Length: 280
Image (spheres, one colour):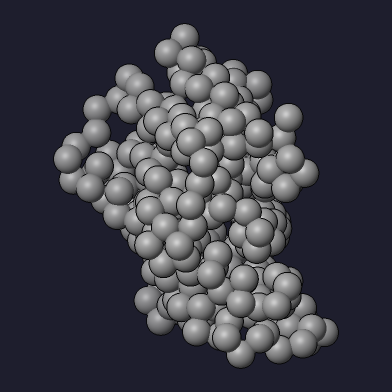
C-alpha cells in the first residue's frame, strides 16, 4: 500500500496532468507560460511577505533552482515549435527519474533498496514506452527530449538538497524559489513588447484565466514535490511525480475519447506497478 507521502505525490502528479490538459488547446505556449508565471510569481510574493527568510544554507540552492526553472520553461516553450520534440517530450519525463536517482547518489549520497530501484526503472520504462508507441521520433528530437529530462533532473536534485537545508521550511523555500518566475514576463516583454501580453486580457479572457489557473495548479503540484523531497528519496519522488503521463493518457481516454492501444494500456500497468513498488 502506498505511503501517505507517496499518495500525496501521486495527487501532485494528477495536478500536473490536469494543468497540462487545460493548456493543451492553447496555441501560443510562450504567452500561456508567461501568464502562468505571473500567477505563480504573484502567489509567491504574497507568501514571502508572511513567512520568515529561508535558512542561510538554502539560499544558493533556491537561487540556482529558480534560474534552472526559467531555462527549463524557455526550452519547453521553444520545444513546442518542433513537432517531433512535442512527441518526444514524454521521453524527458520518463528519463528524469533515472537521472534524478543518479544525481541524488552523486551529490546527496542517497542509496535506495532493490525494490525502489525496480519501481523507478518500471516507471521510467513504462513512460518511455508510452512516448514511443506508434510514433517515429528523430534523433534530434530524442536528444532534445533527453536534454529536457536532464534539466528536470538538475532542478529536482537542487531542490531536494536545498529544501533539506531549509530547516523544515518547505513553504518558505518554495515561495522564494518561485519568485524567479517574475523573469518570464520580463523576457516576454523584452522579446514581444507589452501590448501582446496585455491584449489577450480583453480579446481572449478565458484563455488568460485558463493560464492563470494552470499556474496555480502547477505551483501546488511542484510545491507538494518539494515538500516530499524533504524526507523521501529524490528518485522515488521524481518517479511518482512523472506518473502524470499516465494520468494524461487516462484523461485523454475518458474526456477526449482518444483511442488507447493495448500496448499503451500495458505500459500504463507497468508504470502503476512501479508506483506500487515505490510505495512498499
